[in-house]
Length: 175
Picture 1: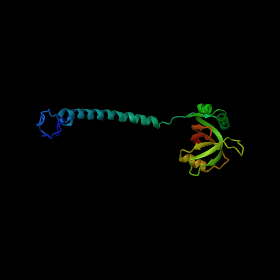
Picture 2: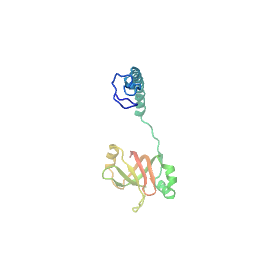
Picture 3: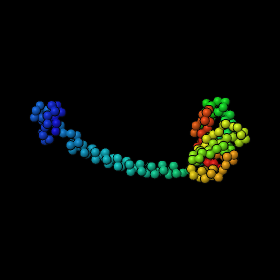
Picture 4: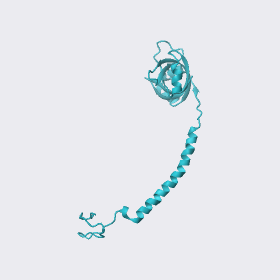
């Protein structure tokens, strides 16, 4: 062991330093009561984690229950008109909102990550579109049967809104 006061090497069993006479203290982990405290803490953690397993299981059951989502039926053209007139207001009205709307497919992402859609009745030269992100294989299988120009209904959650990129929507259901 090393004396903390003078730095000289001292025998492990020494009570005082032979050089300076300073009292040598055992490290805390070598004291009997330290290990008693560790055992008590370990038992307490073990007992409390046993109770948490039941709680986690109950939370899992609650999460496994299907949460019913209500969608606000909106007109996609109206959403774009609001975005054009006041992007801040459009964000306040639609951000994180669950919406349902009818639309026309404008394009498909080749990787199957998203489709872009436009309002039904939009002109051929329309530059406005919403990016709708495909979230599962069921949606992908449905959309792979469709073509540009087909009319579909999307239920989803608006994720982001911007005056340049328009609306980004996570698809929950597509018909």
